[in-house]
Each structure stands twice: as C-alpha cells, then as structure tokens.
Image (cartoon, rainbow, N blue to C red):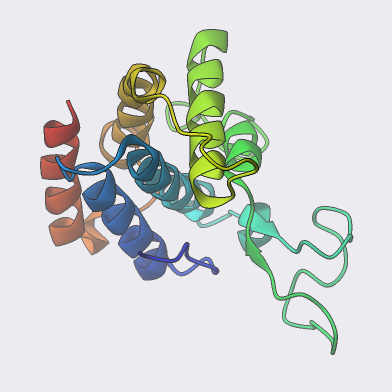
Length: 186
C-alpha cells in the first residue's frame, strides 16, 4: 500500500494522488480500502493546490505533530535532534486551508457546502476505521462510502483539472492516468 507523501515535492504529491486514485478505483477493492485510497488522493491533491502558487508557503501543508503551534518555529530546515520530522497535515486541516482566501484565491479556492463537508468527514472516518480499528469487527459501511465517493471525485476534479493551482504541464501522464481512474469511480 502506498504511503502518504511527507514533503511538499510536487512529484511526490502527484504520485500520492495517482496511487490513491488507483487504489480506490480497483473494482474488487473492499469499501474501507476505497476510502483509504480516496483520502490519500485528497491529501496529495490538496497539498498540490496549497503549494502551487509561487507565493505559497510550503509550511501551509505541514503538521509537525510534536506540539508546536501551527506555523511556529521549527517548521523549516532547522529541525533539531528529537524533533518529529514534518509531515503533511491531516486532510481535514488541508480542506479548511483550501477553502480559505488566506491560502487560495478564486477560482482555485475550494468552496464546500455543509453536506459536502459532512460527506468528506464520513469518508475520513471510514479511512480511520480501516487503518486504525478501535473495535474488532467494526466494518465500514459500503453504502455510506458510496454516498461520499461523488463528493471526493468532485473535489479531486476541481483541484486537479477544473482549477489547478499548480502547473499541470509538469504532470501530463499522471493527470491522464488520474482522469481515467476518476471516470472508473463514476
């Protein structure tokens, strides 16, 4: 299974999107793993959007996970001994940032309705349940995942094809592959 990207490298982020969409689009895939793939793809696509502008701050997509305030000291290369290496922020935080005019301008900014946000939150819950089961036998609900899938696909299409904040010319083959996989998810 692909690991989530851990840096603001556009190639690594796009590879994460491609791997996540490919995982989600496998027809024999269990619904919980489909949620894992979609969340991985969303994380990469959101990070691409948030770092796509020349003026973007790469720290906007990082989550240090060591108790330091967001954007505080230690985000950059001056990580000291004992510090947790920076990693991509959780999808819920990236979604919030992608909807903020502090990070993205129109038309790239991601405007989500309350119902779309709830659908994505349910998808995140299914992903977490699949990777971190709290109780044995707690299975993901295939119908709930299926109801959230169109929202995830719509967000991916917006971020990658309709209003990309990054240079799509740098990833032509990846984007062709992703577009084909998104069609399979429809």
